[in-house]
Picture 1: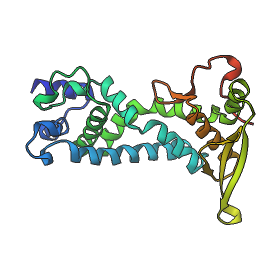
Picture 2 (picture 1 turned 30 degrees about the horizontal axis):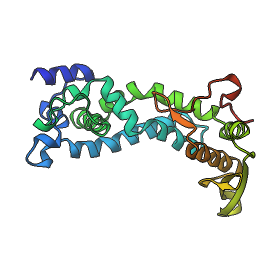
Picture 3 (picture 1 turned 90 degrees about the horizontal axis):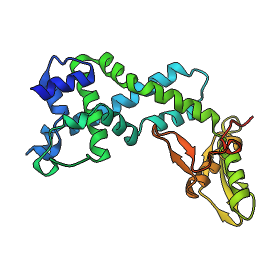
Length: 249
């Protein structure tokens, strides 16, 4: 009972039905029947999380197209970010696990992310969408704003050009591989080629966006991109001012 009280304090919400909170904190390793674990709640919570973030992005960024909104969502709705929030709230301390998992120094990322999602579902079932939305946005708005800013600042073509000039024998070239769709709504497939090596291709709704996406794919394959602590993509080991990824004009 004390652990449930502590969990409620961490969540900032008092449950009317403690059974649903207990279920959200029950890992499959401690149950004889997995239906008694938090797995079904995790399934529901994942969808609620996606819905709340999508609605927030739709309302907050009315000038952004679907592609940009998807990029922002992908940056914040990830197992890594969910696990980070779960760890920050110490949800793992309240998770009921089997004997084989007791005493572990750290829970796997997948379990931490799962309990975060199952708690979201418990909040929704106990109090409706409002407490679930408040809980999600309390910990996500800052990350959303950072991801939105990062998306506008990232010019992967410029970053790849600079990297190629330093570390590769030739500059990158961009190859148009395919285009599909009617004239008013075409999609373009582009890949990067450097010194005869072709990198993974990318699709987008304009050649400019496709080239940026292809440059990002090339940088990823080259191991030159990494996530910061909030899951935002940054250039790896390249901190000098002239190497900052700036917006393309």
